[in-house]
Length: 99
Image (tube, rainbow, N blue to C red; front, side, top):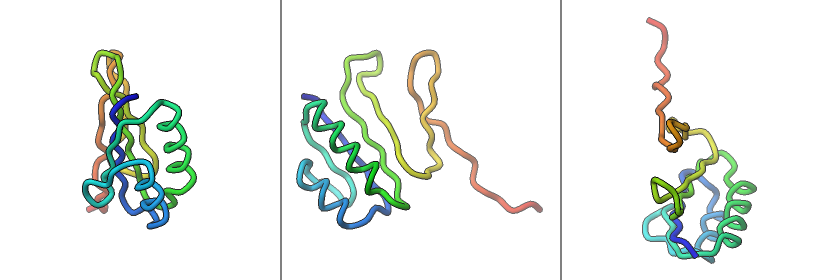
């Protein structure tokens, strides 16, 4: 069992309802829980199939240098990157029209 956090933006209401079956929604679109690896993988599959135009990040406790792991779905300015064995987050610049 490991602590899990899921944050969703602009996902369909039916997916938010489905997440509430396994996790506690502490804020709109923010879910937490203590789940097994198998349950975490099943939740990820549900998110992958149902996020449509929205975006999702899932983070969980892990036994590594940082103490956590995470993965993302959908379009977002924040992108996971590997740097010296650590997963960090890089930002895409805002789209600006040519001047």
